[in-house]
Image (cartoon, rainbow, N blue to C red; front, side, top):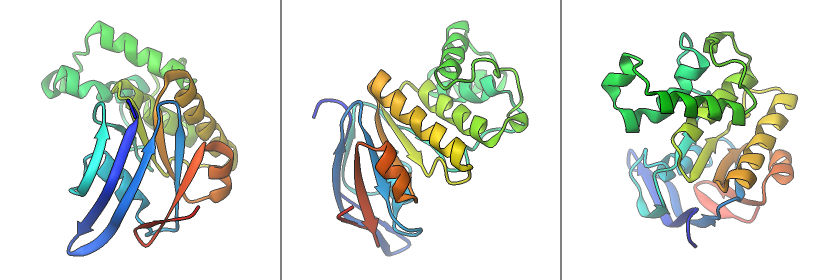
Length: 212
């Protein structure tokens, strides 16, 4: 498969305990693949391994390092929405310039565009701690888009949202996959949401893939 994400024989052991074993799948550009499973099944570890955040055995292949949206959005509450999105450009502009908020004009324009893509073009100057939960998760998605990665990993992105906002965020992820050709891998605790919003589903049980 050209582009997207390919995982073959993935295994993860943490503190001497096997967390994932023999995981293989692929996510094509423009596709949303949902990972289902109970708490402790290994969903978060799978996404973190795909993002290169935990050591693993097996193959994880993507055109560039995937971008990740964390369950609790991980925003700097006192920074504006725009400044939070700009963090996605750290690899391009360097930590020193970021600390001084010396963002190049093209990067600021890109951040504004990312906020527009998630429906938050009007809130760029607002501090993150003044936004609703759904808005904060959208800012986190915009920050991931700022990385310009071909693969987007979303770890339980709607776990703390009410049903209306959960639907909106998952519709947004599906739309981004379609319009931008992103390969989206999203972990979800709720099978009904996965059925409505994912193109395909896989299920983890005690660190192994089982029929969804």
